[in-house]
Length: 308
Image (cartoon, rainbow, N blue to C red; front, side, top):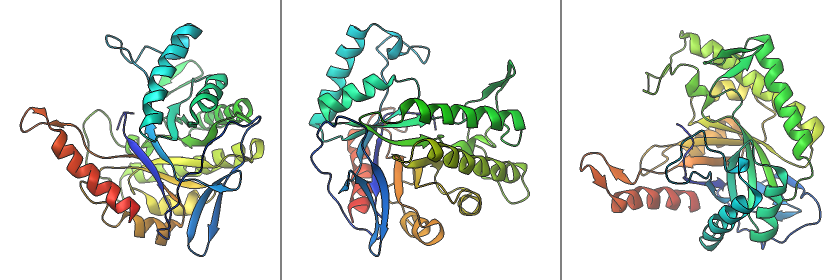
């Protein structure tokens, strides 16, 4: 799915519930690690456990579209927008936001220093196409050597640029890139099977994800590397080709229950789980109107399972 405002949370395998500690401004970048113990995984920030209560966040004033970027505006406009937005998020208990690349590092630090909110920096990793040698490739071919070189170069530069940034929680790669392997347009196609070409393309993609994680870790050992997968599609290939990803992130829209999600991630991949998207729309297509009660029903069911 395309990026949208929604909730996410780090669910600890082993079902251990940890509460976020008080966030205070640091003079330098934090040390963020994933720790595994007998009762599951913990996300540790400077040695203290943290559970992520976050939002996918972007800023589009009424009357603008995807071509608008808040980061191209004047410092005063950016500051006013951040002060308005981050105060709202802070008041509702948000401690982290998912933001795509483009945000300057000093604004990550501004958000953290003034509102105690961390940033998960998201590189799309070719999800929406790439330009290679001046040619636009709408559907990224991860087996293509120039594509691989370009993406690895971009994420390595990203780690170099943002290393040591106060308030940077983790690096996040992709956004349902596995769905992009076989969706030719906006409509959802059938889930691929073993003999579909998308399965072979997925092998190359997850292998490249792993190479990216290793390259970024050579530059910055203080931030985990996460992926934003589309649910559990190709989980077996992730297990085989992406062992060095630190956190398994997934966009999950299954209705009121996540069903077997927790068990499968724990038993098959054994990585901590980050919900990079989940929930339900506020608009009821059947009634052709807003339906917050229905949305609350699905959200409540999702959050209940997460905390359980």
